[in-house]
Length: 145
Image (cartoon, rainbow, N blue to C red; front, side):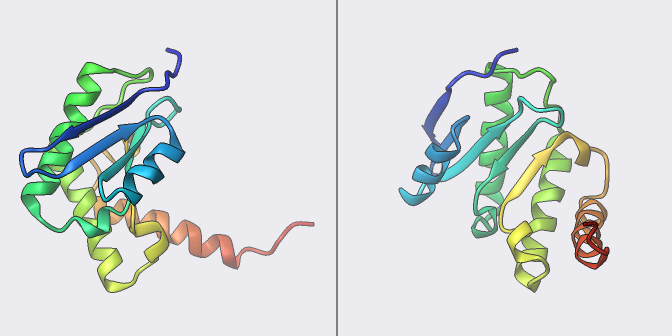
C-alpha cells in the first residue's frame, strides 16, 4: 500500500487534542502547539506509531484515550504490513517507557514511545531492556575502519 499524506486532528473525550500524521514535521508542529503528537510510521517492515513526548502523559485515562484513538485510526486507515497490537500490551509498553524516563534510564530513547509490532506479546520492560542493551553494546563494540 502506498503511503499517503494523511493528517488527522481530533479532540479526545478529556478535551486534549491529538494529531496523528504521516509527516514528521507536522508531528513536531503539533507538539509545539501543545497537542498530543503521534507520528504514523506504519508503512515500514515493523509498523509503529510514535507518541512524541509520551513521558509527559502520566494520566491513565488520557493514555487510554490516546491508545483508543490510535486503534480507531488504524481501523479507518489500515497499513500494509498490518499494525497489530492489543490494548494491554500497548499500555504495558507505554508504562515501561514512562518508568525508564522517570528513573533516568536512557531518557532520550524513553521520552517517546514507539508502539511497534515487535513488542506485541512481549513483556514491555524486557523488550525495552533488550533495546537499551543494544544501545550500550553499540558504544562498547570496537569501531571497524
